[in-house]
Length: 329
Ligand SMILES: [Zn+2]
Image (cartoon, rainbow, N blue to C red; front, side, top):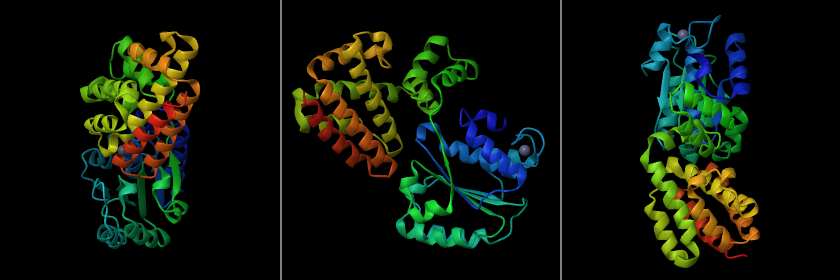
């Protein structure tokens, strides 16, 4: 139990634990990171730690009544907003509710799981709450990137940015905690790019695997098929909002593989070693300059995703810009 169940993030874990134990908690936090790093999971365990009765042993203990209530999603003083969009009315209700004293705990916590989905009007309403919070109120805003929120909101929250975890740590966790065989755990930890949820999606979700292969095939065919057909193929991947980062992460590691293979001609160094044929084919047709440019374009799209630009627009730009980049030999 406790924060030890969160992989990596030692700096953040120590920081919030110090604040819980020393009673120096802030009124608002902005917990942000790639969805594959599970910032929502971090917010929940943070809330559990604040509400937990234990103050000496492992926090959260997972055994006391408040801990069990948080796990069962029925703690009276914790409200979670799972909605992808939050309108101003809902923020106004939050503002009213936060001033009512806690029911059983010393604190009252609100987790907004999609901070980037708060409408601009809602964000302005939230500012008011952040400026004059009651002593017992704590708001945890979760977002894919801090850029998705107004600078005035950012500056009133303590930022907790999640970082990718070492591949070795993911490998060990998949093997020891999840019980995956060595080879599978190794493969998943490479593809995960430091994100445990991505590793688990690769291992448990067939859609992820199909999409990975289709995406690479799309890049391989791009030049012959042209922009319109490539856009159609991209649309067929039907990427949901919470999966856009995944597609961009896969694109990034694919183009890195392409560069590496061009230089070393050795599949052992590849993240997507099973896709050697496609990587080899596209590598032959593309120049270093073009691949580097494609990498830059993917990074640019990652910034857009953090700022909550719609997946549809991002994927359209991705096809257009990568197509153009790769034609530069
Ligand atoms: Zn507890």
